[in-house]
Image (cartoon, rainbow, N blue to C red):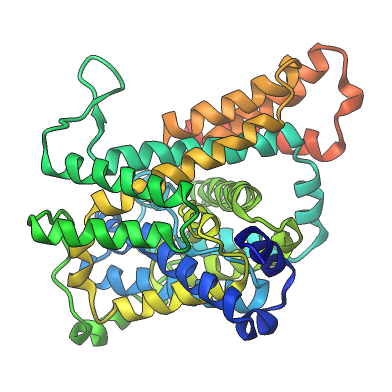
Length: 436
């Protein structure tokens, strides 16, 4: 049985069956470890962002790790899906810079807003509403979501590799290719591409490991880890269960809840539609994501969502919950080795993210490029996700444009009630986001 047949088999196995199949188990273990390293930067980056909201970075590290651990285990055992859950990039920015910095609320109130929004997310996920909304997503937009997330990953990977940077006379500019980080990343990219096209099992993980070793040899170390160790765990309780609901009926609180709910529901829906290989696992994956988003507020961090970097795990062959469970265990182990994560440079992770994003762009082939009303809304999603660094913003423009163009072309009969509803909800989200 070749590797493609093994992966197809894994798609159909229950969690127990996957654990007893040695070939599948090996591939899932490698995928889980690869996915963890691809998203491991969140352990450092999330606390740095939440620090601006007032949450101590040394304690937020624990919240980030524990919420990711819990989320991955729930995803693995409940949904049997290879999806890694972590505090979401973009969601944490909304938490910090919109709710706390711009609206002037405390981080405790932001936690309360996240928890209320997550409860609404749970209600959507565990009812038929989730199925109605999912069915309301046209195939062209699903393809656009996958490609948009892919292009977003490519942008993140190129930035981590030092191959692009913010431009002075343009949005982006070429990075300094003479710097050690860029040179190391280009080596890692070439190695990872070679291993990938040769269909080497665990190629992405091998690429990360070899590139990291070279980074250690040449002293390339770029992650500034917070000054924290497992000995500080006893202090963590000071940020657990601190949601402040005292202004829950105030208009700013309610508006923030609506926007946060839109981000959680539709960003999660878009991510899961884009990265889950077996679409039959969407419903339970959506449910697992909603539960963990709620728990993350209690644990003292911004809401968790499916990590786009999960795609690196699925491209490594991950198809069952074992991938998520392994990633969760890796998060747990990282509690004891937080400073050691700095020895895995971003230049080692970037190649995997770039290749994964490029592979996700394949979904564009599923769009009818001869039908402007199909491909233009998808195009908006593809370009606006990376340009705005917000998945929910890209989705909003695409979902508003789709029914508008269909109606304008006198093809309203192709729209469903769910498509209209999604368009109106996203329009409301855009309006409210502009007011917040």
